[in-house]
Amino acid sequence: MRNSQCRTTTVRLYISQITTISQQQQYKHAAKITSEEAAVSLSGCVYTILSLLSLSVQITVFRMHYNSRVGRMKLVSDALRLGCFLLSAPFKAVHWASFKVASDVIDWHPLELLAKGSKYALLILNQPIEFTKSTAVMIWNRASIRATVDGGTNIWFKFSEGIENEIGLSNPIPDLVTGDFDSAETRCLKYYQEHGAKVIHTPDQDETDFNKCIRELSTELVARELKVNAVIAVCENTGRLDHILSNLNTLQKARDILGSVPLYLLTHSSISWVLHTGRHRIHVDDRVIDQHCGLIPLGQPAYVTSSGLKWDMDCLKLEFGGLISTSNKFTDQATVTLETDRPILFTMTLPPWK
Image (cartoon, rainbow, N blue to C red; front, side, top):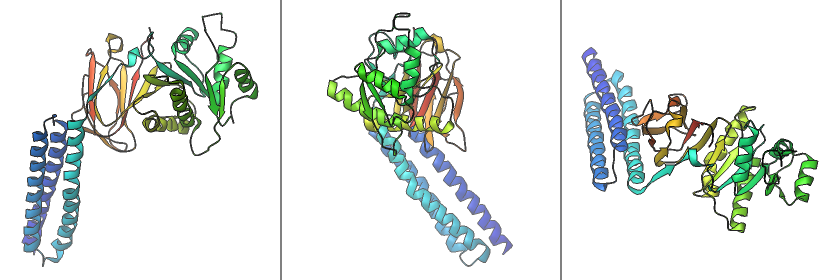
């Protein structure tokens, strides 16, 4: 009996090692798949062979020790665990390979978002504006269309009051004012409506005012036949944590509303946006050398590969309860490349705007 238990334990460890190695190879191979479909087929064969080897060992051992009362339940447990792996491995391999074959690299130019001639929509959310007056006015003036969101209406009204001629504010009236108006002051709504703003009441409590504003903005862009390259929401990451998390949720959901137009969350010191499944190139310059950035998984674990960061990742699993890449840094590389199999939040410290 003792020898039988030892043999059972040894084989269980061997099976565990095979499963672990197979999982590692699955993601390592997946992270390095190029656009050639042959590589996809080859990696799939490797996974299948490893999986069949594990299953063969498991069946053999199970037959040898079926009558062993001690080893029986352990082997059944291993068989179930291995079965789950066998089912998941091919699907994960196909998932990784499919987007690597089909998807293009997406280029991002976060430091050029507010440049002269850029086309973006601007949203003012219900947080204090901590930009300098000159920077805030520059961001407002260069926007193609502007909206204030509920309490953000009060914020902008008080911020812009009396500075039209002081520092070159061209037109302080937003194009849209939206929200359920539980925060917006009546006098601000009335003033903007009288001066040409489209005031839209959005009472639905199943969505946030931020999310509903994006829907109204999308409709307005279509009505005006106006194309923008980005939607920028000005909102400091301060105050209630649930509001901050809600804003991140809207960042992830925005693609269902805006399509290919990205949504950015802009504070006086940082900018954040979602990198969806696929490959990405982020173009920066020497102003961000040694500046911080972060890569945060959204909702589920993400396997990420990068180059151009101080602490690069090689098919690294990012997840809450495990590792997330906070306080990473840019290097002297002009381009950061990233690859992810799930949506992640990319956030970075900003240099002064030009």
